[in-house]
Amino acid sequence: MRLARRTLFWKIYLTLLASLFGVAFAMGSLWWALGESPRQRWETLQARLAPQIEALGRAPEGAEAEGEVQRIGDALGADLALYDESGGLIAARGRRAVLLGRDRPGPSMHWVMRVSLAQGRTLLASFPPPRRNRIAAIAVLALLVAAGIGLAAFPVTARLTRQLERLRAGVARWGDGDLGARMDERGNDEVAAVARTFNLAAARVDGLLASQRTLLANASHELRSPLARLRLAIDLWDGDPSGPARREILRNLAELDALVEEILLSSRLDHARTAPRSGLDRTGSVDLLGLAAEEAARGGAEIEGEAVSVTGDEVLLRRLLRNLIENGATHGRPPVRVAVAPEGGAAVVVVSDAGPGIAPAERERVFEPFYRPRGRDEAAGGWGLGLALVRQIAERHGGSAACEAAAGGGSRFVVRLPREA
Image 1: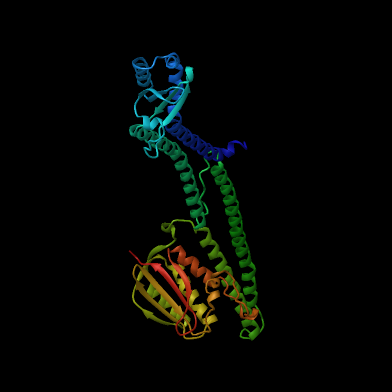
Image 2: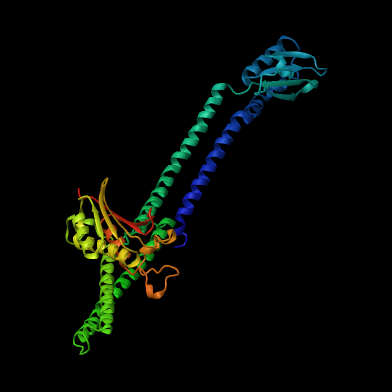
């Protein structure tokens, strides 16, 4: 199993090894053609023509020696020169300057071979360098070898990159919130092993999140029963119905009831996070300016803007606007202003207040559930789930929510939603 899972390693290793062998073969062929061929040709022909070459040592000087040198030179395809024991020339074929080493044809020098013969005679043989057409043929061979290596390596590389690209795309989908995304596990190499490991981890994370959502939903449902009993007990209380103690208890109960409702809503939104946009409940055309005007009147905020419509869930969008206005009233100072306007293909909602504002380092963290800023005492409370729900609802509608710097101080929350087509 371990060897099977190292298939990718062997693919890369063997491809590299084959490439090295191919390059070595091409270089060896080139070296043989340019360097060894004349020597091998000489040795082969010398063995074949040994009797004739040895006969040169006994051939009489003159026409007979000249004729033998010509015949052997023609057979070898080389320039020849036969010298006596004192260095005098007996017979020659071709250029003597090459044979004597005084010719300088450039970077491709002649090969000169020396053979000692009988009677102290010496035979010199000179082979010319490879012709240009031969060098061109060798260059073409090298290019063909390189092309062959490239073609052989391409399918392996392409398959590997396709696997990695599929893995990257799947991880990106999962990271973008599609928790149901899973990788293709086909194959026995390292990429498939990574895909299987990721799928197991993703399934565990999905299961843990599902358990957490179920726990929150069940706990919230269970809390509603004692809250209802407490409210009934307060209604049946014989004490002063307008007393401060009763009012405080009712206020706390209202906060608990609102918190339970927000937890349930957050759980439902989180559960439906990966559902398609068409799956929104009660989806329809929503007059965003009219909805904002109703919530502004309810929360005592100022309203301005232009008519713009979006496609979405009116109940959820109402909750988004209400949470933003209540956040400004609770954590800021009046006046709380609401502005609605079209901006390109988006509908933009801006809710601002005249409070102390939010530090730049905390403008993103305020959207975290139950985030409490540093230095804020417990009595002042944190942001609860209100702004977290704002972002969830905005993203559910294909939009965004952000806290931006306000020119005149205070807080400024901006929600962008796609306009109705």
